[in-house]
Image (cartoon, rainbow, N blue to C red; front, top):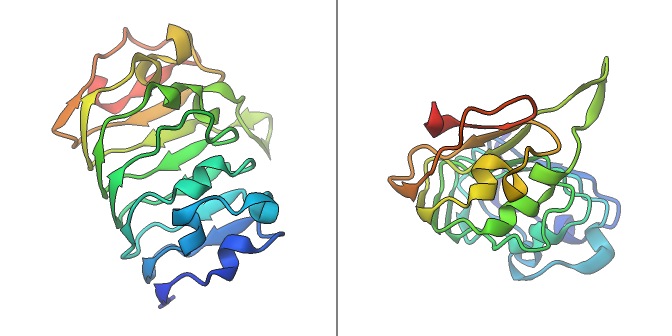
Length: 193
């Protein structure tokens, strides 16, 4: 594809839209409604947003954090900047989050451990009962501070509902306290070997 410019505003407000997949284009902006605030029930059906490998600039699209059915969000390999959302009460259905290779700054909120990434069971994709490993990838940004224990070891120090692969590498000012080796159903952290 060779899409350029801004994603059409209608994508942010379409009531039946389930998937936005515009990876590998030259888009520079997301719909303003996603940056300004969640447009209510207009996007209650939104499950999958994949906007990786574009030229997107600006802040994290915080409106997407409250999308009740959002399961997959990939924003990687763009030029997004500023803090990641606090995540308190957000991302209830999320199973895969990739915001790597951007310019995000600030710390990670402990509330990330309460998102669907760490609390929801694996999705069954009809693969003989096999579920999907959840992914939390914020590598290659400019994140700082201590990584909350719940992100590297599950909420409250207990194993999450499904295995979670956590990618934190290439954030030079991020302090990671590695947990003991994960057991079955545990969190695997890239920088913890």
